[in-house]
Length: 265
Ligand SMILES: NC(=O)c1ccc[n+]([C@@H]2O[C@H](COP(=O)([O-])OP(=O)(O)OC[C@H]3O[C@@H](n4cnc5c(N)ncnc54)[C@H](OP(=O)(O)O)[C@@H]3O)[C@@H](O)[C@H]2O)c1
Image (tube, rainbow, N blue to C red; front, top):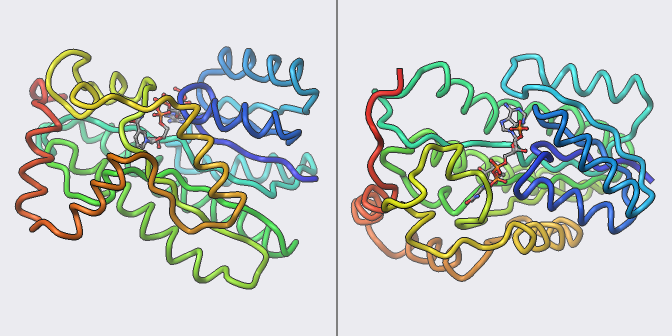
């Protein structure tokens, strides 16, 4: 049996994916920047489930990150038959007020590294006639999101890319699934610099537990579904996006995203 590689496994939804996979006896490759947290999770999962856990502490916004990770895992002889592209972040800021370096990193992590890892490991999977790819999108994929413009656009990229890939892969033994969660109780809001108390999607709606979101994604990936919309709010969001004019959903998202604190130079 091959390995499952999970990006962003040091917390939030990614950590829950790792726990579910380990509980199913899957050996793991965990990737994130925080090595201390990865080490803790790795030893906990090895202790509780007896699985082999390899960890890579690395910054996936680096341009050569996907190449480096792929080469290292190939050289070590790990066949990755399950790839979960989960690492990602948002940034509550007007686009012109954003810190360009952070915006570029967002695009690199949420889109470029995700696509690059899919390309590298996807080719290996196709060669073996077996593999599963799960890409983490968002309810944000359904809308344009003022004050989080790049984040929403990046998640629309993930959804569109994964849907198309899923169709391309039919008959190869490899599947691609996009999961679209709604607000989920993780460090996402804080990392996106959304207020913990002011008005925004994270405070206006009751976030789902990360464990429930990961469980839905895992099931969808294992059954080879192309898309999974998690939770009633997300389903309602995608339904509304099909019915309402874009100018209306844009205005709703602008209101609900909340107000950025100002320039982030
Ligand atoms: N929470 C929500 O409401 C929500 C809703 C819809 C979709 N999502 C999506 O779900 C995914 C997981 O987010 P989350 O909610 O679990 O947020 P989170 O708690 O902030 O977790 C993000 C994970 O990504 C890792 N990461 C961030 N930057 C990285 C980098 N440069 N290199 C490597 N790893 C990096 C983080 O680890 P380190 O900091 O250790 O690197 C962490 O493990 C994201 O793609 C997010 O867009 C979240």
